[in-house]
Structures are given as C-alpha cells and as structure tokens.
Image (cartoon, rainbow, N blue to C red; front, top):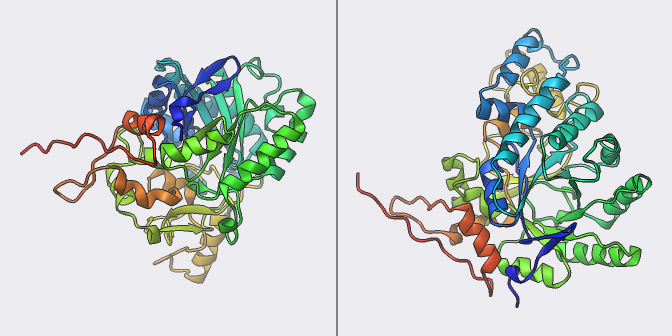
Length: 422
C-alpha cells in the first residue's frame, strides 16, 4: 500500500500535502494548529464559531462584554428576539482573527476558515454574509462551508472581489446534498474548488439521522460521489473525512480516487489544540463505551461527544445576551424552549436540569461540551502513559507527519517525554 506522501492535493495550479486539519470550534482548531498544517505543506482550518469571544481572548477586545452590557436588561426575559449582533463589530472580530492568522503564516500550505451555516445569530443571512465577506477581506486562503446545505451562501458573496480568487468548498454527507448545492451554484458559473465528504464517524455535528447514522459508511458514500462526479464530468477534488485514524486509512481513500483527507480527532490531543490539558486527558482516557451520539445540540443535528461531558444535563441559564450564536431568525433557540419548560416546572429556580438540549454557546465557550470523533478511544494508543497516570501530549507536527509517512496501519509513538524531578 502507498503512503499519503505519495499523493498530492491539487487546488488550482498548485499542489499540497493532501492532509487537511478539520475546523473545530470554539477555537479548538486554533491559529497555531492551522499554522502548523500550512507550514508542513498541508491545509489547516480555523473556525469562525463565536469569533467575538475568540477575539476577546486573543486580542483583548471587549465584544462580548459590550454586548452583554447592551442587553443586560433582557437577561431574565424568556424572549430573546431583541438580542442582535452589531454587524460592523462582527466583521471587525472576524478580520482580527483571520488577519492575524494569515500574517503569521509560513510554508507552502493553506489556511481555510470553517464557516457553519447553523450559526444563525438572530439574522441568518446578514450575519453569514458578514462572516464570509470579512474572512475574504482579511486574506483567508479559502472558506469551508459546513453545518448546513449552504444553498444561498455563494450568492451572498458573489460580488466580493475575491469570490473567484479564494478557494471555496462545501462539506456534504450524501450525493443528494451535493446535487442540491451544485444545482444552486450553477447559475453563478462558480463551482466549489473542493468537496469534503464527511462520514458518520466524524466528531461534533453529523449530517445523518440520530437513529440511522450506523447504516452509513464513508467508503460507500465516497464511491457514490465519485460515480456522480464521473457521470457529470466534474474534476473537483473530493476529500474524505470522518473516522480516518491512520495514514493507511487515508492512503486507502486516495488510492480509490480521493484528492485528500480531512482529519481532526488525533489533533485534539496536541499542544497546539485549544482544548485545556485536563480535557485532553479525558479524551485519552475515554473507552469506546464513553462515546455517544445524542440530540442535545439546539441545531437539530445529532452530535458525537463523550458521555461525561459537563454540558449534558446542565440547566445553565441561556447566555444569549452575551453569545446568542444559535438564535434563529425569530430570536428562538431549542435550548431556550427546554430551559423555559424546566423553569416553569420548578418556579423556585432551584436544581434546574435540562437533558434534551444544551446551551451549546456557553458550554462550547467554556470547553465543557466534549465533542469527539468515533475513534477517540484509540488516542491512548498513539502516545505514552506517564508515571503519574496521565498521557503524554503530542505535537501537531508529529501527528501530521505520522499521517503523511506511516504505512501498514502503524502509528508512530512520540519520543518519550523526560520526567524532570521537582
């Protein structure tokens, strides 16, 4: 079997190491992680999820504080329709995050931003246009459109001067979703530059039903999409994603025609990943039984996570005045409905628990929603267990190069960390 380094991903007139690191929000796929992928000749993603909070952490801005102060009067109101994002400030936060990342880029690779359509922000079309346009303004190499069909997203930026210059891609989980998207963008004479096909073993939100995701298989979906692309005579790179744990897994897809792979789970336990170290240890310790798919996300999509995630069952008050990234066009969110139901059932407000939905914004912001890929339970086999029982954190370069050069389903362990006596 060949190795990943025997292949290259061609985008436009340039070639890249065919490894993408997926875009994990909120700032789990950090700039540092994306920069390493680009330095090594591949493609890294940052996420624009909750970008104002990310900006506040990185650049000492006060977007969240100011928004909270502005809407403080509404905190105890069950109706959140009044809470709106200032589009100029949203654009500023996006340009700060993207711009600083692009200024730091070295190497021959690329940096993309992952943009979720399901971040509706109480004004779906307006906020999405702002996020996409600001990322292009700030010089991003490309945009991956995720968590939604994005049937109108290209149209939102068709007049931007970089609409045909930047790389634009879409994540789909079926031939049907791809057909709908391509039909919609055909009138713009602007096809996507790449297509990421995400299977049912991916982390975070899934493009499958909560009761039937087990019936699908990434290899089968890829075969169906390859057949469709040949039928339509479309030469767009198709990138496999979801459950690709070894370099041999990746090479297997490329031998069957994939242009590259998108991987994420193994990078969650690297130094460059934004998860706190104690959460990385939770990922290392996880068993297969600890990984579940549930419906707690207010987006309506199933989501894979560790069953011990603190977000499950939390009855935290909705933080829409500060965040509100999942408010729909009417200022509504499925978690708000569930929370209000429990408050009405317990008017004293004590011991509120909500199990059917979670306040995704607040919990993702606090790294308390431990989303993960199906093979997270294998992470312990990729490193050393230390004398204190913890697991050695890896470098992004080590994981990237293991994907790139490994053969025979082998996983290279890192050089063992030296224990320095106190």
